[in-house]
Image 1: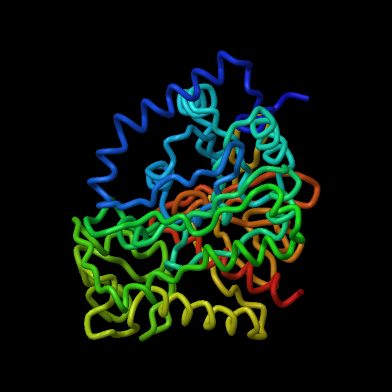
Image 2: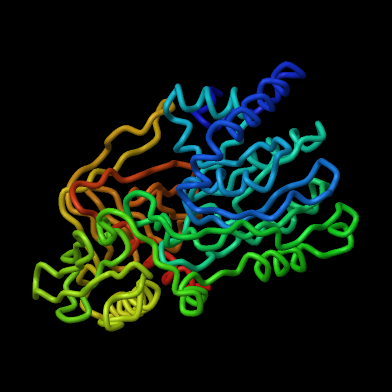
Length: 397
C-alpha cells in the first residue's frame, strides 16, 4: 500500500543520515537560536546529565516551541511533529531528511509514530515529544493522551520533562506574530529508564500531568509581565466565538488593542499583560473561553433540533491518493450531536479524534480510517467545534 505524505516509515537511513541530522540540529541551534532567544527573551535551564537515549516531554505552547526547548538541549534530538507540516515536499525533505523529525497525525491514534520513536531510541538517540499534540488556545496545558505513560515505559528510555512558561503571551495560538516579553524553559523532572520501569502507566501519566500543568493567567496574575507587539488583538476571533452581551456567534473581531462585536457594538481592550481593560467583560481569554464553553454546553442540550453552531461557505476535504481533495461544500452545522456539511454527517461521539491544525482547520478521522479536514472561508472559528466534540464525548463517557 502506498504511504501517505508524512505517514510513511521513518527510518534512520544509517550512520550517514544520523550524521546529517545531528549536523543540521547543531547548525540550526548555532544560527537560529540566538535570534529566537532574543525575540522571545528566553532563559533556559542547563541540559541535565542524563545519558542518552531519553525522551524529552514538554508542554506545547507555540508553533516555535522547538526553538524554546532547543535552548536547553545541545545534544541533538528528533522532534515529533504534526504531519500537516510534512505535506509540503520541501518542508518534508528539510524536517525528515535534514532533522530526522517523526510524523504524528492529529486527531487520530498513530502507531507508526510510536515505532518511529522506538527506532530512534534504539539507536541511542534522543526524541522530543510535545505530549498534548496541540498548542493551547487559552493558556492552560491541555489533556495528555492516556497512552503516553504506556509509550514512555515501553520504549525503555530515560525521561526529561521540560515546561515552557510565558510563551502563551509571547505568541498566542490565536494571534499574529511574536510579542516582546519574557519566556522560560525549565527542566521540571529527570528520570532514568529504571525509575520509569518501577512505575505504572497511570503513575507516569499523573507525573506528566503534575509537572506539565500550567495556567498562564494564574502565573501572570502574580508576574504582570507586559508583552508588546503589533496588532495584539488581531486574530482573537480564532479563540472567542460568543459575545457575552448579545450572545451572537462569529461576530467578534480584534484590531489593534480593541475587541469589538459587530452585532451589538460591545467593546473591550486587550492590554499588554493579556488581561482585558477593567477586567471586563472577563478578566482574560481563559475566563471568556470557560464561559463560552459552558454556554455552548447549554446550546447542545437545548431541544428543538436547531444547529448549536453553523458556518456558511465551508469546504469538506477527504484524504484520497495522498492528498486532501474537496468532497462537499456549503453550510457546516452541528445539530443532534453530528457534524454535517453537504451530504456528509459525522456523529461526534463516534469520531476517534477531532483536532485543530494551525488556527482554524478542523481535522478528524472516522472509525473506518477515513481522514477529513475542513477548508475555512473567511473569519472562521474552529474552536467551537472542538469544544462541542469534547463536551459530547464527555457526556457519553
